[in-house]
Every structure is written in C-alpha cells, then in structure tokens.
Amino acid sequence: MPRLVSHPDEVKIVTSRFGKGAAKIDRYLELGGYEAAKKCLAQGPDWIITEMKASNLRGRGGAGFPTGLKWSFVPKQNPKPKYVLVNGDESEPGTCKDHLIFLHDPHAVIEGTIIAGLAIGAKVGFIYLRGEYRYLLEIVEKAVADAYAKGFLGKNIFGSDTEFQIITQTGAGAYEVGEESALMESLEGKRGIPRIKPPFPAVVGLYGGPTVINNAETIATVPHVIEMGAAAYAAAGSERNGGTRLFCLSGHVERPGVYELPMGYNLKKMIYEVGGGIRGGRTLKAVVPGGSSTPVLLPAEIENLGMDFDQVGKAGSMLGSGGVIVIDDQTCIVEFALRTISFYQHESCGWCIPCREGTDWLKKSLTRFHAGFGVAKDIDNIQYLAENMMGRTFCPLGDAAAMPTLGFVKKFRKEFEDHLNGKPCPFAKHVEMAVI
Amino acid sequence: MSPETMTLFSPALAARFDALVQKYPVKRSALIPMLLYAQDEIGYLSDAVIAEVAERIGITTLDVRDVASYYSMLRFKPVGKFNVQVCTNISCMLRGGYELYERFQEELGIGPKDVTADGVFSLEEVECIGVCCWAPAIQVNYDFHDELKPEHVPGIVAGYRGQAKAGAAPDA
Image 1 (cartoon, each protein chain N blue to C red):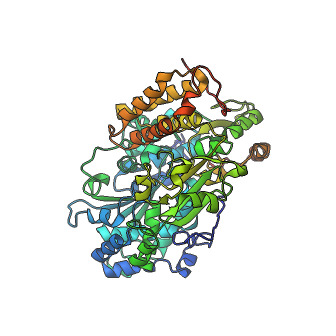
Image 2 (spheres, chains in turn brown, orange):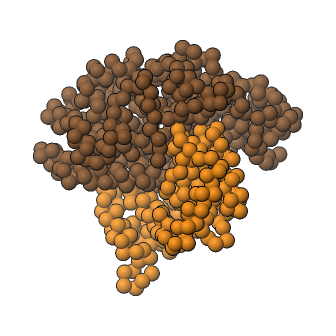
Image 3 (spheres, rainbow over the protein chains, first blue to last red):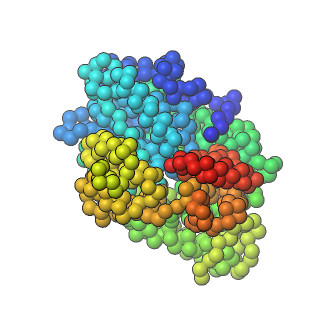
C-alpha cells in the first residue's frame, strides 16, 4: 500500500482528506463533501466558470492550460450531447499522484466531475483509469454507486431537475492514451491513436460531441476551489499559477513521496528539505522536474527555481505532470537516457512516422552507445534525430521523447563522449546487447 | 462453451458483459473493458474469446484483434497463474528495479516473458505502473508490492506459491 508522507511546508488542500477514510461516502460528507456541488447547482454555469477562471487553476496533466478558460470554450448550445472526461490514465514515468487521489478521495473526483458537468451543460461524465489501477477502479466504482444511492448522481441530482450520470472506464496498458484525443479514441473502443486538431475536443470530442477533458488531479481540485473561494485558492500559489500541486518526489532522495506544496515552491528546497536530501549522503547530479518527458535540469539551474508552469518553462524545461525525479552522482546519464527513450519507443503508437521511426532509431543508437560501440558522430546524430521529431507529430509523444533526449545530449555531452571507442561505462550495471 | 448459455464465460461474467454493452452511449465503448475482464477469467485472448466478444459487440474479429494488439496488458498467449511484472522504468531503475528483476529471474528460474514449468508463475519487465514514489515496485496480476528489496523476493514468491497450492483462484 502506498505510504503517505508529510512535511511541515505542505499546504494540504487536495490531500486534506487523505488517510481519513473519505473513500466512504458518509465520512466524505462528514468532512464537508458534496457541499461545493450543491453550491454550484444553485449558482449556475456562468458563476462556476468565473470562479474557475479567477482561481488560476491550471491543468495538472502536464500542459498547464487554465481550467476555467478550457471550460468556457465549450459551446453553450449544441445539437450533440456534451461530455466531461476525467483523465486518470496516469502513465508518465515519475507520476503517481492520481493513484493516491483515487485511493483516498474518490468522491472528490466524482464531485469535481459533477461541477464540470454543470459548468458546461453535460449530462454524462466519464472517469477513465489506467488498466493497471484495477483496485482503484473498484474503489471508484463503489464510490460512484454510493453517490447514485444518495441521489447525488442520476436523473435528479440533489433533488433538482438536473441530470448527471457518471460512467467509469478502464484502459488496458497504453501511455499514449493519456493524450486527450487518443483517450477519446480508446473510450470509443478503438486503438488509442491521436486525432488531428483542430477541431479541438471542446467543439468535437467524444462521440463527436463537445468534450471537456481534465486530469484527475485538476478535477479533484475543483470542489476545493469552490469551497475555499477562488481568491483564497489562487493566493495559495504563485503568479498566474493558482493553488498547490501534488509533487511526486522519486528517485535518489531520502524521503520520496507525494507532497502537496504551493505552486512556485523552490525546487532545491523540495529536494533537500522536503525530500531529506540525496540518499546516502551523495551529491545531486541532475533532476527531471515534471515526469520523464521534461528536459533534465542541472544542480546550478535549480538554485532559485520556483516550481510553477512559467518559471520551469523559463528555465528550459516543463512543470509537466509533477513527477520530480532526482538523480545522484552515481548514475550514468547515457543509461538513464536509454531507459527513458526505451519507454517512448515501446509506447509510440506508430501513427506518425517521425515518432515511430525516431524513437526506434534513438533507442538503437543509445543502446549501441551505452554498450561502448558509439562513434563521435552518433552524438550529433542523436541530437539531429531528436530535433527532427520535435513538432512534427500529431500528438506530443514525439516531443515527449525528443525533448528529454536533447536535454541529456546537450547538458551531458561530456558523459556521452566518455562512452566512445569501446570504453566501458563507469557506472552501468545493465548493459544491453547492442546490434551493430 | 456450454450449450445452455452459449457463452465461454461464467454466468457472472456473462451478466457483467450484458450490463457493459448497455452502459455506454455507444456499444463499442465496452470493447476494452470486456477484453480485459475476459482475459482475467480465461487467462488470455483465445480465438474463441475474440469471436465471442466480437459477436457481443457486433463488430468483426479482425476489428477486435486490431484494437487488442494495441494495448500492452492484453495478450494472445497464456501466462502463469501469477504474472509477475517488474517495473524497471526510471524511478524504479534508480532504486534497484533491475536488481529486483534479476533476483526474480533467479528465484523463479525463468527468463523474461517465460512461464515456469508448473504454470504457476510468469515473469516480465514492464513500463511505469504508477508507483514511482514507492519504488521499486512490482505488480503480480493486479496486486501491487512496493518499496521492495531483492531479499523480499523469496517471501513474495513463496506466498503466491502457497496460494497456488491451496488451489486459490488467481486474484486476477
């Protein structure tokens, strides 16, 4: 069972009900649950969207798009039914926050889905969980059934004339399905291949109807925003980055775990104080700040780095999905790059050629390199390949593979050069056989 | 297939499938969960499973295969009663995922994607399973085991072996 951690610097908003038995509906109600949904039902869609815009809540899946703005794009009148789709396909390596939300506070996801539905005028919401999260799907299904039994879902929610249904859905192992258009394809019972945009999901989405797709953490945050007020929520964070974020601190830290910290929290402090520093008294070599697809940062780059979408963007990386992966000085970056790209090669859906071929060639080159058979021009070739994948695919998976690769090659070129001419890797324990 | 029910699946699962095709605005949305639940009961997607799922949804078997081949949890070959999946992705790798994977290979006496002779265990390396902060971690069927060290391996294996001996159904 995933262990909960705590640190005095945490500001517990989304995690406030963790470890309190809130998966049970009566307990959730005791803790103030479903009051936000009732309030939204009384206030109406325009008020909800105004509040969400004022909260500065930005999408927690990785792109950081303002949630209120996203909801406002959905046309008010539309011949086709509208849908809310909750993305719980959490698959970005380094990310495990939705896991805890579904485990400890599934009703927050349900309540947030209802509110999103009220805001855009949808009658149906879907909660999609990755297939590996079977035990969590069972928890969510139970919570949904309990919400129906209480009359919070159904034809007349909270005794009103408004209808809202929730349908749960499971994936079956595919990173790509975390991309919003691929997610819709998967939910329609197809291969998870991305759709070209425009049209955007807010106009033509699931089953062709306007669809709002939000990350599970974003949706779980919504009831808290309503409950505490948009201004108070926004004030907890930094400029244009409202509230808190669930940071998944993993890798070589003394105290890994999911910590809820204010947006803009200093990364160095997160590693050394919240996470207790580098494991075994070693030194920091690098940190991947927002899940495996985000470019690596060097110790010098994190000195004054506030963890919000804008500041991390300015530092040349991304806040992404909140997966902070800490790497110590005993780690081979070439091996780390190879393991990262192996993942993207495995997960590429094969639809776009630059991604399908690019990830495969990157993996081949890096495997050969790591085994000691690299030549000097391979380094430039790896960089050239990655540069030519950027921005040339339907969905961001191609970029997700290319961006970290470019980061590793540019920032650790010396380490790549140290692997040249059959020199054994100074760190590696697992050298895969290379096909030359 | 029993002639009375005309289904490969247990009455409970058949009833679940009847409910699933009603659940979504479009019937085909039931496809992926249906394949996963069918696999949980039968062990893998056999030709007969694919044919029945296609029939229930009203699409071709080719359509079913096309979709199923995309998802890494869906398989066309049987695995062990307990399928041990060791995550070696970056967060797990940094905390000893590969050492764990090697220890499992020794303990079970099988290599990657193999099944033990008695059919109890199979072993594979998997991509991120969403337990990064409690790395390294594994999944045995759907059960997570986290914060592992190689020395935990014999105990885990013995536990499942005991379940298999007791004739307990896999918790798939």
